Amino acid sequence: MITLRAISDVRAAVGAARAQGKTVGFVPTMGAFHDGHLSLMRRARERCGFVIVSLFVNPTQFNDPSDLAAYPRDEAGDALMAAAEGVDLLFAPDARDLYPDGFTTSVVVAGLADVLDGVFRGPSHFRGVTTVVTKLFNIVAPDVAFFGQKDAQQAMIIRRLTRDLDLPIRIEVCPTVRESDGLAMSSRNVRLTAADRVRALALRQALSVAESAIASGNRDGAGIAEAARAAMRERGVEPEYFELVSAETLRPVQPLSGTVLVAVAAHVGPVRLIDNVVVTIPPTS
Image (tube, rainbow, N blue to C red):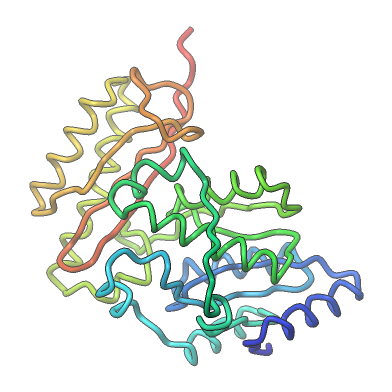
């Protein structure tokens, strides 16, 4: 594996791979790798002849400067893990190269970015995500890009972005990877204290409450959401949001029907966590 920082060098490496007839797979990340990231790299390695992973803590998607400052960084360790997964190229650009002096352009995906995390993290969050992902797509020009289901709203937004801008990139969304107790893997988990790590299970428990209610035939989305929030509060966690929405539009569905995204966000101690599950409700006969 090689590590490159210059945009021109990455483009040259991609051009050489394409000249050999290789399909280019891309995994955009902010580093601090865990098994969730590695599962995306493995999927890319299985599907593509040339695999690129980007490592860039994107400052424009953080609405809280302290969150940006505290975000874990370990490029050397990440490079070792990526190499062990057979990644061909690690792209670790400097912020000054991606956002040079005078940079004023942004990419906005309206609608999908205006709800859930778009409300609680502010409009700059997804604007930062879509702008940097568009730049990375233009640099890497992948055939396939791999994202995790844990960031379901982000993945939906990126899919809409590629569709609306006619980008010739297939977006593949891979399953959420969880710890043995059900906590969704996140780079932020390392910042949880031992006590907060236990409390963080409230998110998964709340999702399970919703899944069980739906499985039992309950179609009252508002009632299910309130029961799930109550379950979180019993564990000492106040949800930022807990919503049951359409997995296509992210808008509320009442009564529940079709494919539903059950999404939750909460601060556990100083750490903001998100999680979700997708439930398909069979049509009534």
